[in-house]
Image (cartoon, rainbow, N blue to C red; front, side):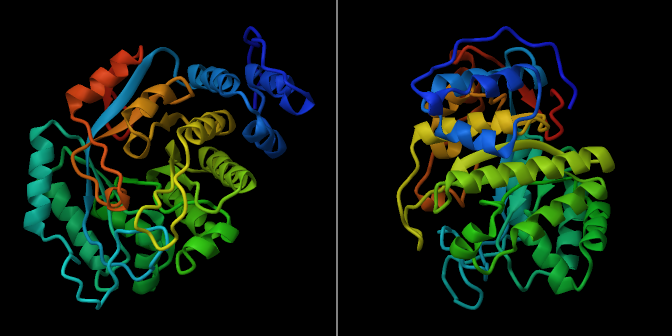
Length: 377
C-alpha cells in the first residue's frame, strides 16, 4: 500500500505498556496497513475514544466529508424453510415439519411487497431466505427474470453465499457456472449474510451443517470474478474470541485485495452486528453497545480496502447507530420496511425515511440517499 502524507498526530491514552498504541496510530496516519497482531492489540485497547479517532482517519481518507448515506430498501425473506438448523437462528422452519408458519412467498406476495417499495421511492430489494431443498436453480432464474421485467428500476441484491452454495450443489453445477446463469437472469449484487465468523472453529459449533469459511469466501471470490459485486458481514458475540474476529477481518481483507487486483467486481461495504440470543437454541448473552462500537471501529481501521462501512442500527438501536457515525461508519444502511430474521430473535427497531434523515442530521452529519452501487439518488 502506498504511503500517504501523514496526518497530524493526536495524543492517545496511555495507561501502561499494553495500552500504548501510538505505533499503530502512526501507521494509520501514514496509510500503512496494520498487521493481524496489531488488530488484536486494538481489541484489547481500553479507550474507545482512541479507536474512534483512528477509525475516523480511515473513514475520511476513503469517504471524505460529513455526508452519511442510506438506502430505501426492503428485506424480502422469500422462504423460511431451511434444513441447516443453525443454533443461533430463530427464523427457520425445517422441511417436512408441516409447521403452520412455514412458507414460500408467491409471486403475488412478492409483487405486492415490491409495489409498496416502489411507491416509497425504493431502489433495492434485499432478498434472502432459507436453504429450501424444493427450490432449484430454475426457480431462482425465473424469479430473477420476472422481477427484472416487472420492476426494472429496483436493484436485485439477492441470495447470501449459503443459499448460492446450496443452489450450486443441488444443481450439480460449478459455482462459476451457477453464478453466471443467475447473473444472466438478473442477479445484480450479493448480500454478505451467512458469514457469521469466518473461522471453522466457530462455524462448526454454531452452524455445523452450513458452508465452511473457505466455501463462503470462494463463493464471493467467484461472484467477483463473474462481475457481481457484494457486501460482507460479521456476526460476532456468540462463542467467538477476539482472535476469531481478527481472523475474520484479515480473511476478508485478503480476498478484497485479490478481487480488486484481478476481478471486475469486489466488496462494496462491510457491516458488523452482534448475535441476537433471544429464543435461539444457542442462547447466551447479548453483546454490549461498547463491544459493538469497538468492533466496528477496529473493522474500519483493519479493512483499509473496503470502500464503505455500514451501521447496524437494526440490532443496536438508533442511538448506538448515531454514535457509530463517529467510529468510522459512513452509511446508515436500510430503511427497514420489513425485517424477519433479526426480529424473530426479539429485535424490532424500525424507522421511516424521515426519521432516518433526522437521526443522521441530529448526529451532526448530512443525509444522502443512495442506491446499491453507492450512487447518489
